[in-house]
Image: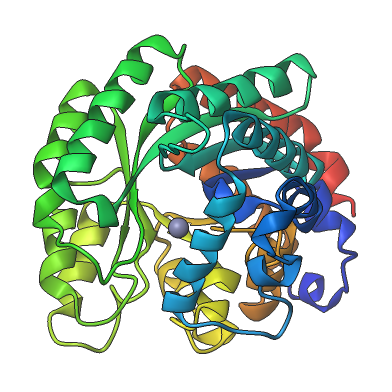
Length: 355
Ligand SMILES: [Zn+2]
């Protein structure tokens, strides 16, 4: 790239106008403060204020505190109508941010107080996706059903069954499974059987792994499943012993990484933006996708994450464009969707690069 290009201050409009793909977004963590206020107003007895569900600029929390924040958010999204509302709001916000293709992920939750079942939870998300489509928003949305590590193998098996059911019936909207939740809880081997079963059915796998240090064995167990994408992979390339084996494995199989800069900084698994492992993986041209993780909790958006990556690692406009364009390769939807997105990107390219 031309060196002069780096010198030019670009307006933030470039990042907003840049068409983007979001592949790692947890529904409950993506709830904006506006939607949060609506939820809080519906449940005043809980005495929750909006500061309890967001980590503002410059603030940090431990990973443990972040998981506690999710417990608070879950108290606010207990009924199917809450799930429908947050799904629609989150989709609208991603669309407003220039996201053209979105894979949302969420763990089906049962709530005895409202009668919400795991099935109605999933149906509410699908209804939100359907209604957004009817509103003609310029965004294609799919859903990955999430397995929370806390539930152990039994719940994981149940979740896979549910995912299989919707994979077959939900008209190409449910495409895969996510494994997430507190990485200090449970063991990878507890999830092998259900995840293998899901894979056989044709469900894609996006697995959070290597989010905390010293988990080499655990990480290798999950990698041996040959997941379709890796969430974070923060400590894959650490100086720890055996780390090189993990890096080589991921490179050999070219497993794409979903990388969420602000999330890792605010939850303190990465010390500073310039230390983020995006730098390592990008420098070896490994498939890397910039994502938000939890745009509500971490007070960010995908445009901002692209801007942070570009400014920290001195990317040119063309490199940022390519990063976004190549992320289309790693979506879970079919080849025909990929072609449609590429066409859209190519159509927008002259206008966006003009910024
Ligand atoms: Zn995540």
